[in-house]
Length: 188
Image 1: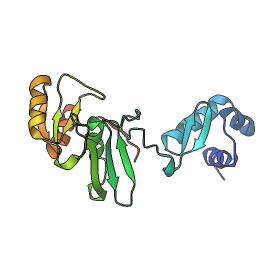
Image 2 (image 1 turned 180 degrees about the horizontal axis):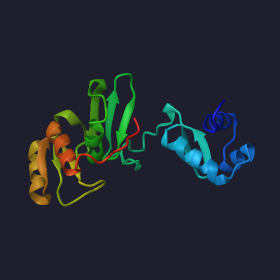
Image 3 (image 1 turned 45 degrees about the vertical axis):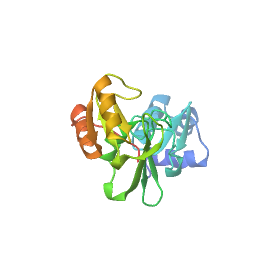
């Protein structure tokens, strides 16, 4: 016997796109369908947008949405991991980029790219200096900023506070500041 959630997935593939259509098909209440759709969304099988439902496909991951906090990414702050095989994982800022690193198979990372906070030039995240913490935040908190030059990071920290760290230290400090143990879901 096929369960209703499996049947819902088949119907969405066939063109059913609203909860109302699905409720009519199964002759159940909208609340029952909404519960099924919420579960399917939590399982990562569908996407609900503006009253419609769609099957979630790997190729539909948007490059402009953060894998950690789901905010739209600003290219000036974006943090991008390029994995073997060409897949990219986007984060909206260094804060989310540092969090995402712990949830990625590090052996699959070919490169990590972001932009220097002062010059806006592309930099390799693994060779950059970071300021983690401090009094200003352009995106997520606690803030993290990336600098190609350690001297620039130190000057920034003098004015705005924070810890000047290399990439490995920055990932550990972000974990500490985020109080490890809290669940962080990311879309990879």
